Length: 240
Image (tube, rainbow, N blue to C red; front, side, top):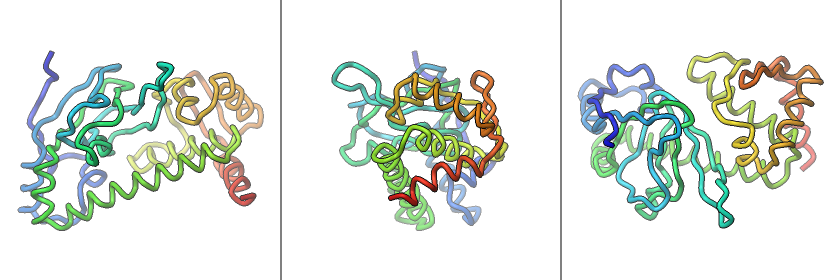
């Protein structure tokens, strides 16, 4: 079944500041509008692209939440990242012109499809766009480093604290609360991403609740003491 597609314009999108360069003039904005081919809807549990699929486009997430994952040799799904509205997904495909992971919608989502050959073409003319693409790639590299640090040396509490702080910070940049969030992913998916067993994730959440750091109601998480979470992460970093 073909995904639903609708024509879209960046110039009147409320997420423009998040996924497009700032300070473009009208003509440049119009040119970028031409780059975005269509909007595409992906149902919860649906796949935006698959590992091994030919790379043709980058996708700006307009609404919804995604996870990227790869199948391990024993058939499990290893979660490699979570992406939300205003973020760009699909950068993994640039290197070898095919995707290296699956992108799965954790809730009904909508993305703007940006054919990469058109982005490259326009980047030569609009240097702000070129800088912006480089910035997005750089942010991805920094994020990967952060994940490696997380998995390489942190205890369970430090991993979960860093994860919650990162998530709430990204949501806050999108105008959401600084202290409340709804987890779109399961405890199991969080564990897969953080390199922790499901029981460890649940136990660590319970520990945070007992200590009065967070309040948890199913998938609703309220951070009661942001400083306590920061201390958990920073103390770890000070030790290394």
